[in-house]
Image (cartoon, rainbow, N blue to C red; front, side, top):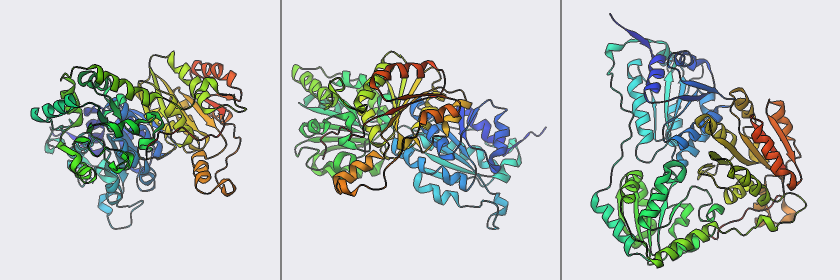
Length: 541
């Protein structure tokens, strides 16, 4: 007996087979067959208020789970609304698949409703963009894209699915029946592992620098194992401020002093000051391992004769191999490790010594850290902007998501919802300014509707402070323009959407307000009036 299935069912079953548990989506004509098919495979749909939010949430899911994050969007304008977060996902090295509905393939070139060449648009923003051309190819297209997203340097991919293919039935005996979703990871040779070990063992002031894929959030204990096994500081870079990242303190100073640097999956780009004379010493020996040949060539051009090794390999596989090595710590090496740690953790501001009319950003961050310290499974999300930099500098948690190297702002509340959906037993804190809060504020309703409690702390200085600080530096105080905001009661707005609100103007009220927000069991907004001060900065050039 012939068994047939719709294209939409092939999509739903393929995603379930790949281990997908949650899809972030916004409905639309072309993808309603997939909504229907999802019922039969038990995947959860989280229906958002803006298409970009779904992609940000899928990005957060990928970062926290080392698996594919899925966003499902309708065609043309819906697809286009979800494009910007693909750039952020690329920079964050997140395995995201954006699946978009598309106009019927049978009507190509005829001016069908929402006809658009999505592949041409998505290609520059993804590792791979495809459009299924027949219902028979849908399973293979899906598995190839998921595999691509997770292989090499992780990143987003895109699949456009014409509506008529989703509704069309196919004889399942015509399908290959074999899908491979596992990532390809090219391991380094034993000789390369031994060379890196020897370089680190013979160094006096070594460093390992990693990109976003090897942060503690992504690899957990492997990060500390690498430090312990090799007796070398391991520093992950994922901020658009690079060597001026406030969470890295004055790291640029110790980088300049280092005699051996191993770069694992970190692009030698603007975040490393293009490896100029103020970032890497002239006699520094640099070893670069990356899954991307283009990144190795970029490193060679920037570092020149300082490079002693380049290798194409999976950086996670290499990190695992290196963590099995052993470099005995000497007293000199231990002093170096302690110095790097102290330089990175040192902050110019001491919140305990601050006296201010309004609440100082550092004081607010200190209160939030106190609240998180009593919670075993806290997840920290920091948006961009000036207050985002304060929070990145002063707050820490075992799992953290920031706005990333793209420098995009406004995705914070979406990241937080994705984090809570991914880790329901965790308490998720999102720190954002009043400027960035406005991008996706309506997603508080998404959190309420889906019963995803979180604590959003808004540092409210009534301005786009990052741009105000830029104007002050570049043009002077008498040339400030266009960056003012008002006294909006974001807490009341969240209450109106069904959440919990707190408004704080006195620093002595912060701890109690944060506790009430946590205990509310609702998506909560703690709206805090702060001074609009410039964030601390490392001394990078």
